[in-house]
Length: 178
Image: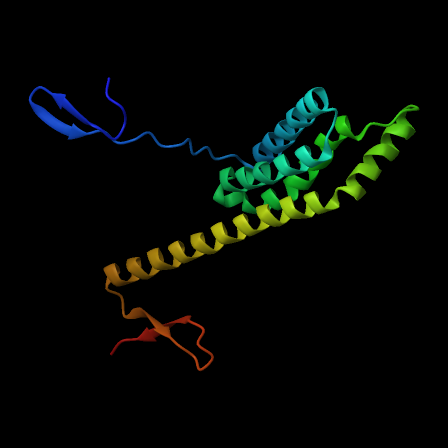
């Protein structure tokens, strides 16, 4: 079998095989939160097992998990991405926080770990928020273009027009024909 992106010979015909694409799953808001929490919990357990709970590794791996969570959440649930990733960070921090002396000792160790590593937490939340915001703005633009195209196809008396105010911003308004 030929590698993706190479020419194949099929019954005298040549065709170019398309390379395989990466998976493009779409999680609901709850699914994205569960994905992030489960991933960070697995990362924390592996970090504790292999590296004795190194917070640098945990924090550095939190950033791509935040980005992937924001990329894989459904468009309708984009607001949940920046909310669920800090919760996932806290869930995953429990195994690497350490602590001893019962429930109180573990709780204090978790709160301390969250306070000490707040930079990673803020960074991952910022990444998820930026990705979700960009995706939402792009979706709003696609929706506006589709609405404008549908209005033009329908041939109605109202057509979309772009106006440019003195400050350079672009605004849409309806202009009456006739």
